Image 1 (cartoon, one colour):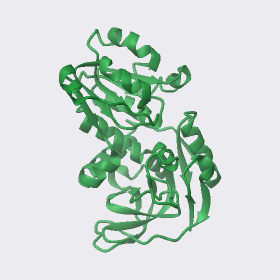
Image 2: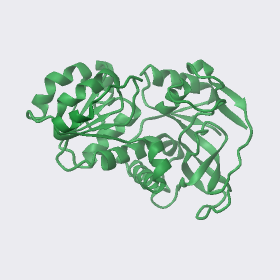
Image 3: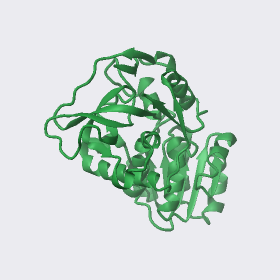
Image 4: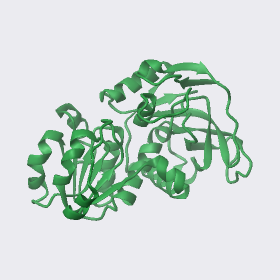
Length: 325
């Protein structure tokens, strides 16, 4: 079968379209004939070696398609059924992929009208947005929320979802004026560049600081966060796009009376697959009912490397989804 793969880590040039063996489902697994596969920033991070994977590797964290086969012990699904899924061990940029039954959601009922293109583009980010705000941030009505990386695919969903969950103030931040403008109509009251945060936070929050700061960025913006938090504020780490972390003395959490929290989709899947399933279903429902609109660009096999390049250099204008068949 056809798949995008890489045999060594590096830049987008390491990606190639190749013939690979057709995978077979094991206990509790589902084989899916993929119609659409999302291109996620996490694919970029794994491809460049930020987190090790066995090589060769096929990227792809989110897919839509139809059930092609059921492994032993799988119930509640049938061959030919339309589904959206988070594959087991990546592999979504391929004609067939394996996913656990827990992370395979039928596109039926409330999700029956959800376009597979949108489903594949939304799965990871929608689940992460729900898990971040409901779970890690424990967002409440009236909260003042700051989202770093507001112009990214996840940031565009977080602004709208924070508003839907009752936040009183939702501010985004991005690295440049151009990227800030890209997020301006994504549910944010204002979108600033990182350099403006220190001067504008007191004014925007009536001197109190932000109750929730969502941080997928790392690097210098992460270093600023502690001074922007309200008393008992929550700093929620959900990524490290800059590939540069900071060191934090645990006593500082005590001294400054703030909470350090995190959300990692893979970590939740490994320990609480039932919880991830609920977050995935809620996120997909919010996409289906229009609460979380998505700007999707469909690409072909020859566009995957360029999509990676744009994600990596922050020039992507929306979510890229590979049309597999």
